[in-house]
Length: 70
Image (cartoon, rainbow, N blue to C red; front, side, top):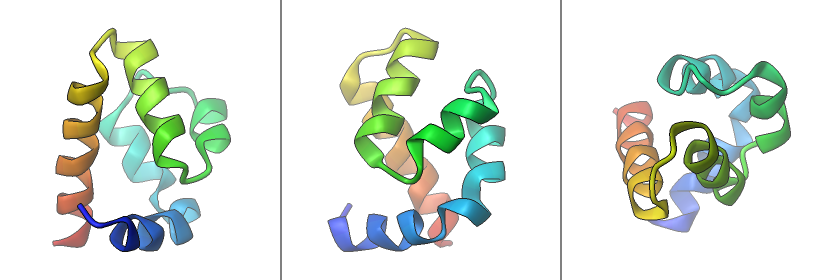
């Protein structure tokens, strides 16, 4: 995924927080707020909460990003 595309999601993070919460229900509202559209923070929180490797967290984010763009 291109960095520019993520920038669009980052810019719309306030509107997308609910979608992120649906996708990763183990993340708390506070964590979603702390992420604030930062991809690396989201990767870290997914790894922490779900016990997955970085590449798996990145794959989940890429899949979610694709869904949000469709």
